[in-house]
Length: 367
Image (cartoon, rainbow, N blue to C red):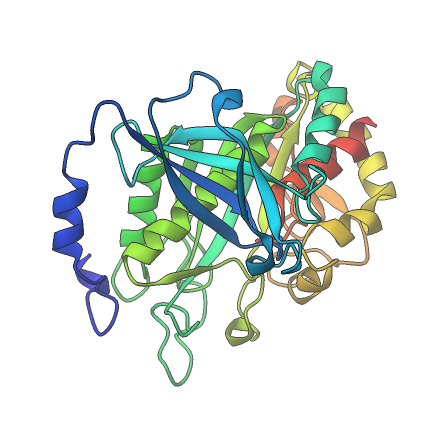
């Protein structure tokens, strides 16, 4: 924490907080933190309740309500919205037997709210379950001060040009590693299927990878990992930006994406490269539709990032190639050599909804 301990970044009363979180919780009580996506389709909210025991299954967690008028999901005159638990994991912050509980958001008629895309994704995954769809998502993000300025950047001017920051080591080029390593360990504690992490091309930019996950589990795990990242950053007094191209980085800097890896049982089997190449037909046909759902603002965020420069493809043209990071879809060199494996969709933005992305990929290729 030493590198982040200056000016206003030190969390208030940290020693006191640590003391009380170190108290052994009662054996007959747990804290369940309900987490949901708000009306932006990007931001997460949470609140915590006490329960007498850890439920055996997700269906035993009770339905709960919240004020949708304060989250952009309802009007004040009809503000009650509902939280339906869909996935849970150990809570790395409260410890013990406490749980994080990811929830669907439902309106007063118990239908999904406008920014709840999980149910539609789950239906798609159920239809294609015989194909054993596997996903992995590479989440890029930027660590910023509370004023939105990237961590490690001079307040007036720009850092040295990109080139030395990717997978870097050193205080003059790797900014925020404390946040990254704490997040990694917290995800492991929570049972999140985190594959790895690395510093990215833009200073203050990092990436973590979640997967391999099957079907709807991909979206659930990425949202939980994002929540954990926000909470970790909060404890260090900094923030996380999933904006694919913040204004301050509009110069010669790489944007942030959420590259999505996908495979089916057929693609993973010997000779699967044929199935991978055949998938390009469906992906090409749905390119424009995909671009509209690969960021929360109908494709507008991705237009800032997908310029054909900085290891990106053009937003208005579909392309694919082997080992080509300037294409819409990349087939890794090793996959081509082995004749089986997976494909990488490089189009999704860093602030994408993983339910919409994974659902779209599955629908394009298999439905």
